[in-house]
Length: 148
Image (cartoon, rainbow, N blue to C red; front, top):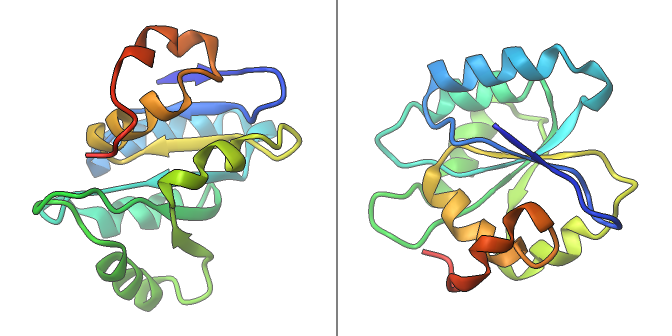
C-alpha cells in the first residue's frame, strides 16, 4: 500500500491487491481511515480472477469505480465488466477509465482520494503516466507511457 500526495493533485492510494483476500485486508485498513471515504476507485482485473467478489467488497468504500481495460488477452474488458457489475450492483456508478484522461482526472485536488488496485498490470500502466506529478514516483519516469 502506497499513499502519494502532490500539490494540486488528488491523493493516490496504490495497492497491488488483486484477489479477494488481499482486497479484504486492504479494505479493512482503509475502513480505519473513515475521513478518506468514500473514495473513487480505479480497478482492473484478469478474467480468471474473482473480480465480482472484489467489486462487491470495494463498492462499500467507493463513490464510483472506473474500470481500466488492459490490452492483452487475459485481461477483462470493460464491456464484460460492465455487464457483470450492472447485474450485481444495478445503480452503482461505474465507467471506463480512459488512460489519456488520467492527468486531468487527478488535477482536482479538492476531490477525494483515488484508490488504484486490482492488478499489478494496472499499476504498471498508470505509474509511468503519473510519475511526473508525484515526486514519490520519480524513478518511474524512465518507463514508457504506453499502457500494456
